[in-house]
Image: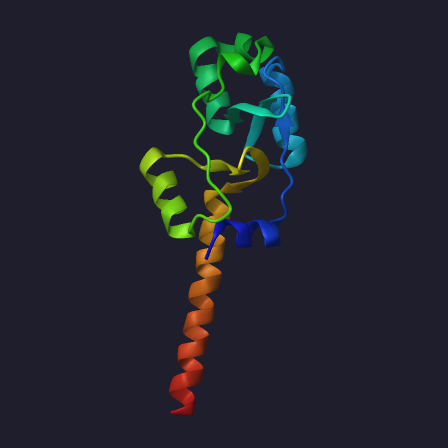
Length: 142
């Protein structure tokens, strides 16, 4: 199973902002889009990821004043990516090891989607359910 298969089901919508957007505006976008992270872009280039976790760090560091500051002050600037042809087990290991919940997906230099740990877990649960059903059918037929 590959990342590309998740994007086929989930779609490849990417919600992004620019680095100069305020934390308050980013929080509104997170809420409106019902997502846990936004890709921060400068044109087509990915320059960061701004997640719910970054909001918590911002408020913990600077209190309510953080809401008026730009996301570039708090975003995760060292972005870890995945590729459409990477296996889910490799991606899940990377996310677990680095404690990352959202990964932008690059096909070459082009941003083609975002996957979350929730997407991976959901797919893995579906796969296990299919395998269990196949085993039940096999045993019942035997």
